[in-house]
Length: 325
Image (cartoon, rainbow, N blue to C red):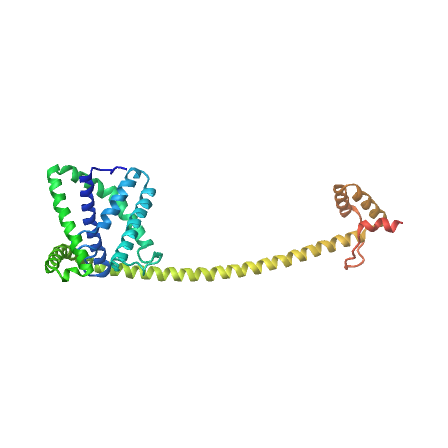
């Protein structure tokens, strides 16, 4: 499998994105921690995890930028995978953690977590759609000789930084004074750049302090109102359910009473019929339900009803034939 870009361009992209990642780290922790933190394994202003992770995202997902969903989650997965591998290797090689997500929900042994998975997706998507086209134009603008010279210098600095940082981690720099001095010089350089970036971030945060305070107060009031509305809605729903239950129970009682009254009227009507009329109804009922209904309606309208008592007497028309026998 070949690289998506020539090797010199790919290496230049690695350095650019490693530096951009280091800036992102300085800005993020400047806002969240309120101080400058020179993060990363190296002493210089580079975070190779960002460079490798983002280049892997370019390699695999640049042809798929027409589908934002695939680009977002694909690059997030690729960058998170690189972060996991780097975290595990650094820990098992040097028994140290350069980042720890244990305090975040849905983390995997502190190496990766869901929050930074989404952060990676946002950062890589912005990089692919916004930053990467600008980087390609910048690299294309550089003459080849200038690009090769810059890459040579940066490669030497990176190699020296890796050696010095490794020596510091394993304690070798204490034995070699020159390595310790080089490490201090490289830290001074990266700290100077990082401090300038942090001062800018701190100034922006300070100026936006009143706005953030007002926004936090606004969010607090909104959350309180939402909680009150939720509780009030729960009270209303409970009251509505209670009234609905009472209404349903009342309607059931009314329905039972209406059925009882209808049965009483029907029995009273049959009790008031004369014997011949009962025979006619029984005969018609045995042959047709519609005729039976029509016959009853006719008798209600024309037949004289003799109600000697208001007490309903149940009479079963089907028992008329037994009376005849």
